[in-house]
Length: 157
Image (tube, rainbow, N blue to C red; front, top):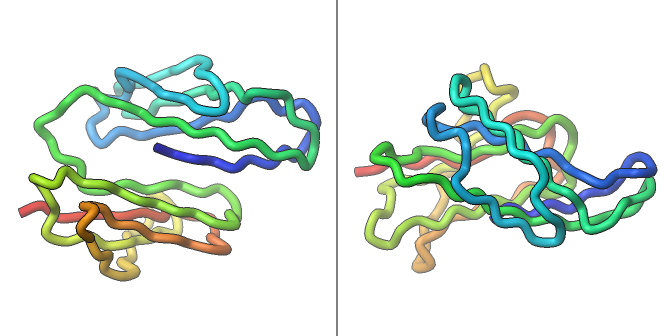
């Protein structure tokens, strides 16, 4: 589940675009999108590149300075190729970014680490190891987060 707190920079904001890139380009389109505090708009997937753009319609039209919360969850078809990372690409400064990844208790990775990149083409810089606890999850919390790529990667047995 992804939660966003949005602040309108101008009057008339009524939607937000989520951009997702699949590990496997052929699986770019989610099979289901669950939305809270809004509703699903258009979904455009490009299997050649693996990108998917999801339009999320807010519950109300915002004026400049007003805030809204929107949550969404993307569900994809099963695959034999395991995922090895998750990241967010931030275009501007973000006050707070929280990422929590929950793993199947029967298939835990042997290692999990936080990483960052200056941009999508820069090499990953490992920041620190992350603990996978009894909840079968790991998390990271960033404050005053600079633009760039911020995420987690893990290694399977």
